[in-house]
Image 1 (tube, rainbow, N blue to C red):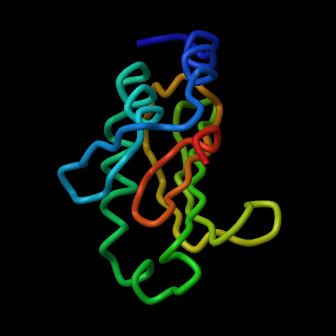
Image 2 (cartoon, rainbow, N blue to C red):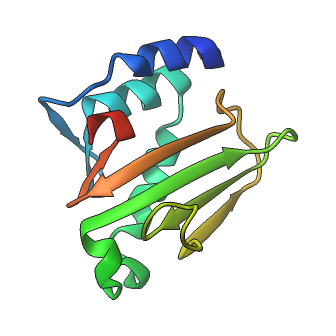
Length: 125
């Protein structure tokens, strides 16, 4: 696994994506998300976000069908919270939250977007 600074350096090169990859639960994701998952060994994060996509909360909320903001916030005790927002976390409350009981994710937080069924980094937006 990489350190936080190494991961930030890797992700800094992710600007746009020419390829999409198919997650086994159906969601597609970009080269930057593939880099994130591979370097930080967090394929579980893709699994967690993917599991919510066919669910009732996403399917019945028109605001979430085209665009979602996902935030993973890691605490000092290595627990974390994964949250989904309709818009920026500074302007609305999360519509989905999931407690992560233990993680070694190297960054204190990461933001991801789901845009028209594709999971991407903000720099790939």
